Image (cartoon, rainbow, N blue to C red; front, side):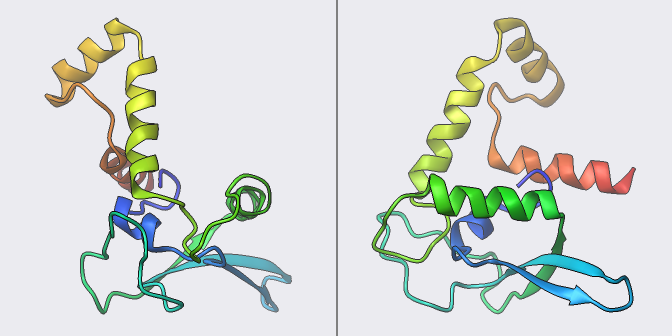
Length: 137
């Protein structure tokens, strides 16, 4: 989310094989990308069903080899077995993760966060904004 600028629900709609690769003859190296669109494999059976902001949305984002490797490691070693093809097991898990991150912040940083943003917690959308700022700079 931080490196690609994905919205929370875009992440949640990605299938496990979202990262693709191909050899770029011009650059003479392997290139990686994520295609962000509705999961073409199935309707979402999860309790909370996320959606892409614009239903016909389709975009491809370049991905570093490192990010590609991290996603593959997650799928192979940590995702576990599920009854669906979605990369992230549950939307609630993303919310839980951001709650854990917020709870781990020292009180002084939470005060700084409140003073600077008006919020007292970190959200998935914060990563999207941070990505945009880094890319623009």
